[in-house]
Length: 327
Image (cartoon, rainbow, N blue to C red; front, side, top):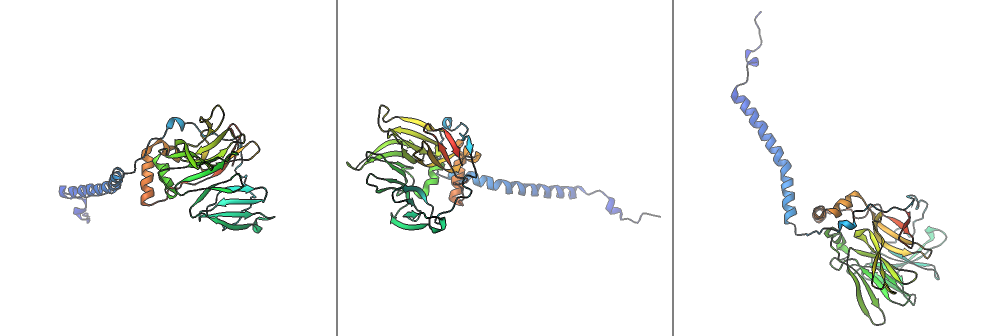
């Protein structure tokens, strides 16, 4: 029986049809290639046209692995009670008066709050005490038990008072303001300062400059030196304020497991350092490569969302800066 199939079905395609198929395939490949490359080219153009200038960080001081305390307890705060829930806006620093049993803290709404603790956290009393009109950060008692405030009009950050009445404070950045702090971190240049203020002569002195986001500060119990933190360098250093080493700087703790913020002496041989965020591979790469920080700056400017605070904690160190406990 003769084959009833259409003989045209088994006939080869003509050269014209094959060329048409190949042409369509090449067109689709070109469209896919351009679709993939256009965002890359646009990103490169934006990157090169953006005027934000990032600087290399001192890698020889950042290349060591983080120091970790032998005693680490990630559940140290389990069972802790929340105090004054809903009555604080970003509380910063705490100051305790053992005579009145009052706690003072700065709030993001400009108020310095007074806190009375009772038998349970639910009975805590929180009072709006003084409105600074700015953003109170560091707090310390003066010689007359007055409260000295480091208010971030620019980026004045933390404060402490020596027994002779001299006030020492940090300026995190003389270029950027409080709401621009992320740009200081991403730019990578040392705009921080350590200063003193004599309340008698009304004289302010710059003790150190070129610091990488100068932050927490604490006068030593023997009054010979003060410890100050450089957040972006993950370190705290000593500055001698009297004795044969007066004016000299020494390392206190390098390569902390997080980025240090405030620091307080507990009266029992330990400094407690607040870690504003954890040290991660992400930030290691960002600090090593200025191009990465510039890309982050562009993302922050266009869409926001660079997470600066994650996995914060606290680190206890002894009088020699050796980590002893961490949460």
